[in-house]
Length: 61
Image (cartoon, rainbow, N blue to C red):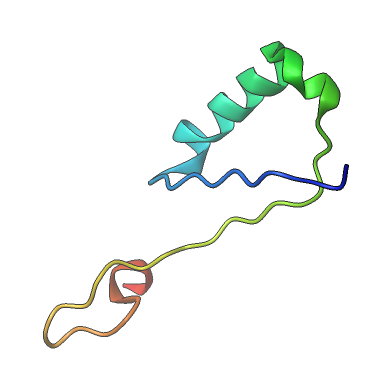
């Protein structure tokens, strides 16, 4: 069967919220025997824009 799953996590700080969870899963989850990791990505999503601000101002200032 040619099928797959996606896992998406929205977190504020990947080092404290995502990495510990993924480390624990890779060590303790019995399903890892059947999984193959193909790719991953980490993206910064800027917050909304207030009047007078520009997109990404909170990330860049």
